[in-house]
Each structure stands twice: as structure tokens, then as C-alpha cells.
Length: 348
Image 1 (cartoon, rainbow, N blue to C red):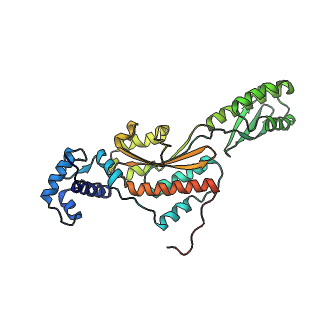
Image 2: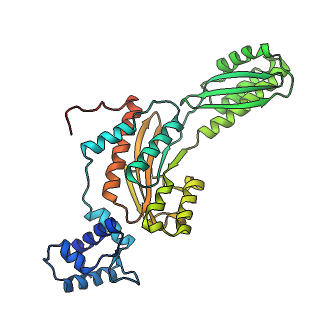
Image 3: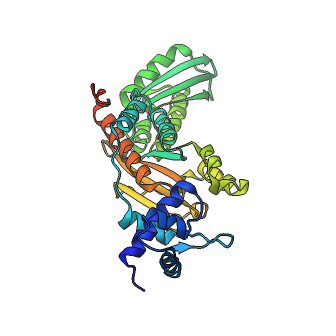
């Protein structure tokens, strides 16, 4: 059966009407959208063909039709009109990303919240692992003779700290010398190199200090290993509760739990600037009735980030894709220049 131009037009009307109403679309509605150029009887025949071809589905309780994942895919690939952001939307995105370049995880959290608030769907954002995360600076803060706090700033500006219980009593006046040793020998090197250097300085350090030094290096190596993994931040999961597709509390809870507890299984297609995954195209079972739109952005220095939106298959793909592209471009500029373009005066 051939997918004629009229069938394509009808499919486009069904998808776009369903996106905005969340109600099955009938032949009268379609006839009205097409300006009365095609009769309702002809439209009903075309709808039946589109159902048979797998592009539309007919709910048991309704005479109207809804798009199938196959129908959404054809719409996204061939029928959807690409949107451009308005000047006002672009300005809102830029303003939401006017943040200080401090800790990476704080920046990701703020950007994720901004995206979710803008598109009204849950969002997630990642920064791919930096290949050479190292320690940039150490400090040891004494608590008493048996405890101290190790503070480590990493090369990507993230800071980690931990209370250490020392195995042997340490003279607190010796801690500054140990800090100097840490900063001169154990910064800007990999975790493996740290362990090698630990052995090299063993004879230069008193036993009680060497035990503390070993504890610090063990903690630092674990922290660097964790820092080398992908940071994933999710935001706005409660937005699902406002969508008619998730009125079923169990269905909403399943997806919200996935976003909270299994976020490492969210789609991470770094090889493409924009990727749209519809329903069954998602690998994770929790996303089989949802769609995911993901855009990538450039962090530089061997880092790449992703920003994605999770929503119903009924989401407005054109609008979401345009807005995600805007956020991705803004994040790329933010990391390139550590700032965004100033507000353009005189534009409404």
C-alpha cells in the first residue's frame, strides 16, 4: 500500500493535533484542519489505511486515531517543520545559563533545572568523563591528634573532602610539611602514578606520617576514579504528574523511579548533535512508552556533554528539539568563553 501525499498530510494533522490535545483525532477534526478540501468519508478510508500500515492506532474506546511509534518516527524524519527559537526564547535560555564557572556538578544541576522548567518535561544533563582528572591541590585540616580532614581540589575545580581517622598519633605541627609533600609530589599525576610516588618517598617520611600519607593517597585515588566517571544530573521528574499520559500513579512512579535510581541507563548518544528516540526505540523498559530527545554540547579539553528531555511520545518534538539545540549552543559558549553573549539591546 502506497503512502500517498494525502496520507502524509493526514498523518501530519493527526500527530500535531494529538500533540496539543492528547485526545484521539477524528475525521471531522481532520477535515476541518484541511480546510474542507477532502470529505470525511475519504478521510475515514485514508485513516483505515494508515492504521493498517502501522502509522496510526485506534483506541478501543474511541472512533478517533492516535499516532503509533512508527507514525511519530515518520513525522519526525519527514513531516515535522523545524522550528527556530524566537529572540525572546533565546534570551531566556541565555539568562538561565548566566552562572559562574565553579564546580561542574553545581553547574550541571542548575542547567538541568533550567531546561526542565523551559520545556515542562523532566530533563537530564551529563558531562562526559575528563580523560585526565588529577589532583590540583591538597590540604589537611587538623581535628585532633587522631583525626584530620583531607581536602582535595581536582583539575576540573571539583572539591572533595573526607574525615580521616589516623592509625597512629600524629604531631599536628607536622601536617604542614605533609601538605607541602602532597602538593609537590602528588598533584597533576594519575592515581597509578600517585601510588608509585608513594613508594618512592617511603624512606623520606617518618612511619606515623607515612601511614597518614598512605591514607590520603588511597582516598585521593578513589576520589579521582569516581570523578573520572560520568556525572549525570536529573531534574523536574514531578513534571510527569501533570501529563495525561501519566495519570496512572503506577506508571508515573515507574518512570520517576527510573530517573532517580537508574539514570545511568538513560540514552547517551554522543556521536550525534541531536537524537530523538521514540517509544520502543529506547532500550530501557521504563522508557518504552516515552520519548527521549538528546542534544550534545562541547565542553572542550577532551570533554563532551549531553542534555536530554524525557517525555510522552506525544511531546512537541519540533519545539523540544529547537529549545535543546539552544541550550546546547549556550552551554558550548559557556565552556568556551566562560560567559554568554550580552543581551542585545533594542530587540523585542
